[in-house]
Image 1: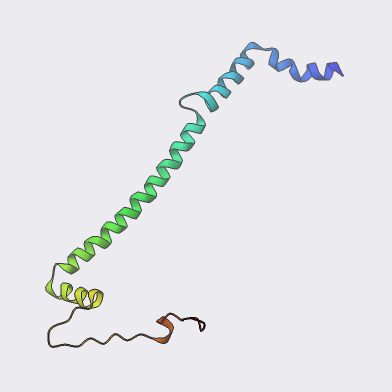
Image 2 (image 1 turned 180 degrees about the vertical axis):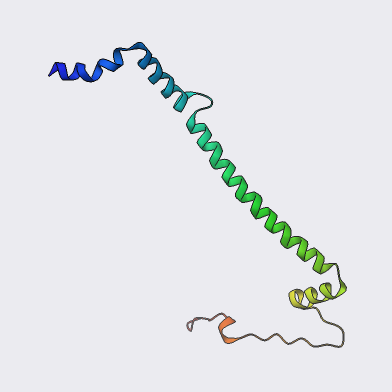
Length: 108
């Protein structure tokens, strides 16, 4: 039984193998340039790339809104649709559909 154990431990008696194993473990887990550290950095880079794309899309939407609001017709349409503003000789009728009205409980 003891010969079986020595058979598997024989490569670990070589100093070069031991140094190589220690070096690999050190580089993978403990060094400043370890695999774990690079994995964290790569995940941060991916998150930042996603945020960068999101903010570019938001900037495109904002530029479109600015371009629309730079004309008098755009300002008037936004004021009428969003803020329900009107001219002095107009009446505004807000139409609510049955499915858009919140339902109340009977016991209230």
